[in-house]
Image 1: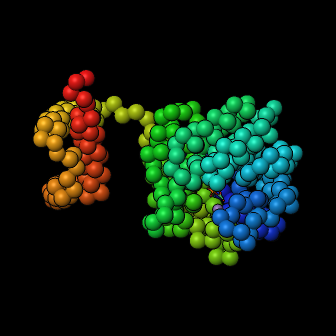
Image 2: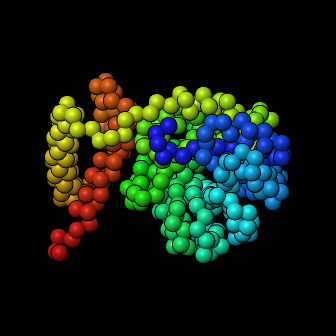
Image 3: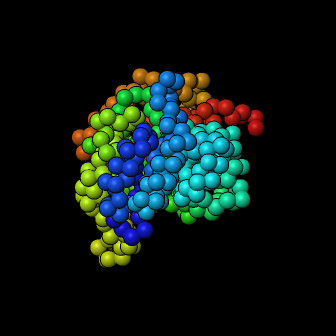
Length: 347
Ligand code: PEP
Ligand code: MN
């Protein structure tokens, strides 16, 4: 692990005293920084296990006393914060289902005023950067100075490889807007299945994340929640050892500078081509206006898209990428033509 990378691990849920202590025993010689366990579980549907409740806090304190691990749990209301503070938890986190709700985050923030416990804020379940930023701001405004973000992926309706779509661009955008907030990856909730954890954790390391939160359980097959994504402490050990940690320092070798120059020039060429394309679009818009034509002709567009995607795939480009790119270009073309059509000649 690169220096300063924090590792948080422990079960999805605290189930029994022995499950918590046994998992912590397994994790204690891995050099992890925090032991996690959910005590109050926000479940999607009623009737599922909703967490063991306050008793679980005493098991976490026992983990700290026995193994010297720092402890953390999820809070979703003021009462949880109060219990966490009373028991001197080292850190708490706001879950994805709470981050979506400004009332809930504000309630948590109010309860935190006057304290300085470390707080992590998971991304909201929906891909909304502003909601994530807003939740972090509410915690900062309460006076908490050590706030981190956890990237746990975003809900999508379609079935995909992942339980939650990683959408890496959103945490990258967050980092750009709030560079001082450390970013932790939670590959467990992104992947949803144990075999996906390593590639996701590797990607997070390659993107220079500041830490990992990975669920582990002494016996994942019988876990009461998130059984498919939990791994044993010894599997976690192997995972951490399998990560390739690459050089994080700035590259200033000539060969790289030359390649970067070429990239910059290519980008400049793309900008000029787009500018040229826009001017053609405007001329088409003007022609349609002069001849009283509709802007959008679906057959022509579908045909052009198909041809472009075919050509691009033949050139070795990703079909998905090219489709998205041309859809964006087309959207902008429609915007420009609509503007032309709606300008009044007498203006
Ligand atoms: C969890 O960490 O167990 C949890 C409930 O996560 P999330 O809020 O990301 O769903
Ligand atoms: Mn979980």
